[in-house]
Length: 415
Image (cartoon, rainbow, N blue to C red):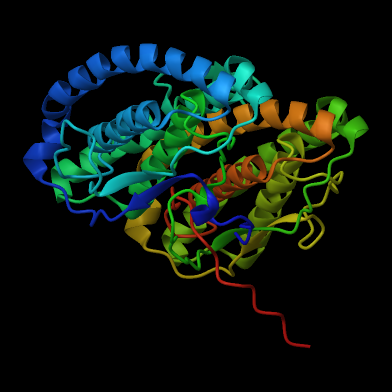
């Protein structure tokens, strides 16, 4: 994805990552019990921070900036929260300290006090509601049945990533980069949200995954999402977006029935032939592309009304799918089992996409633009969903990458 515009170092609240991904088998297995004293201490500190935040609200409202002493106390509380949650959710291995000092492998930098708009300070409790909705998408632990998509919609991304990372850490002694970065992405947004709620900054939290945690890996995956959308949204089509999408939803469901049987045929053909037949590969790739177009339109990641054929290059939110390649027959044979962890992450991304569509609908309706952070977060969710279906349909042998990443620039086709 080539979606980044803002730079992370321009934010007043910045997450830094220096973790090396190595984990101790025993420390992962007993992680909750090791983290319990820090959680209790964080809760006690949180009681004090609550009353300090009230005083800080009055002080900031009157003088236009947070007093340095209150700002320092609350900043240390936010930093301790980042350290404890990074340890609990397996984004870091080192035990945190109880004083919230800098230097942890997953750390946060917070700028000194600055002038704040008194109007946004006065209505901060209202302005923070969208932040709480997105935090729920990152950190909720429940799941529900989604009758529209016909499946389970998972809980929070951070919980899903930590749950899967626990098994990998216990067995292999390391945390996969994608899962670690996904947890760090959620913690980065949480740190910005806490800082905004506690009036440490006037900058609204950004949900942009491309600037959340610093340098990202550059990955040339077989399924890549490319976005050339300009963020402008037509208010009229935004207001009636779900109604306008009904023909596409119906056609996608009918096409999906055929794709289901095509995927079964592709499984047998790939299992015996070692590679997907060219015709089935192209058919399923076109279905995946159309699915991405419709998803981008419904979730407001894209603005134009998509076509009905899934033609490549026809939409500003596009899938680049590699040509068919040989696949490991053992992985093909057990594909439905191997895909279960990816299904859990895909379901959690579905929760995030729903929150993005809800908040993006209001933002686009009032401003005529989709916020960059929401658009990029939605694109990340669509990218993972496309990679998941590519893996399940045996269009590719590459496992979906769960964290934010950059794609190498597309090479223009030869004349």
